Amino acid sequence: MTRATCRTLTEADGAVPEGVTVFDDGYPAVANLRPELLRALRAAATAAAAEGVKFYVNSGWRSPEYQDQLRRDGIVKYGSEEEAARWIATPETSPHVSGEAVDIGHSEAKAWLFEHGAAYGLCQIYNNEPWHYEFRAEAIEHGSPPRYADPSRDPRLQR
Image (cartoon, rainbow, N blue to C red; front, top):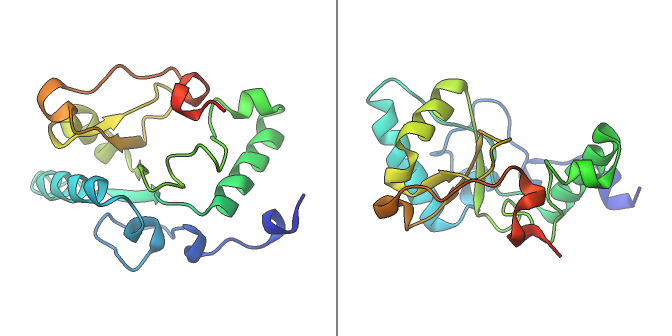
């Protein structure tokens, strides 16, 4: 392992403690999300709150070091780089590193987003990751695009 992957990751890397919401700008994981994604998340979270549903951020923006550590941990967990790629992108390709993805916590929020997210441009991208959402402006008028089976099938992540 490299020195960068051995260090303790902090909130500055995008780590989030439990209970962080899409309104918590004090955390880089939220504050560093792309503006259009953050606006859509906050609009959807406001609507969901009227129904008693709260959006928690399990992960948002991540530093390249954080993403690299997740990838290395995934290789150990899943037994190979190929299998880890079904769950974890590289730092160079991850939409989390670019601030274009958020992982939403709690089943109620995920269910609410699955049903209503496209109206805000928030789309589930992968079949195997019901928590992972990205902004797609065209979804507001046309609905969410077809999902990929997993990140290894996403052509944006291929290098």
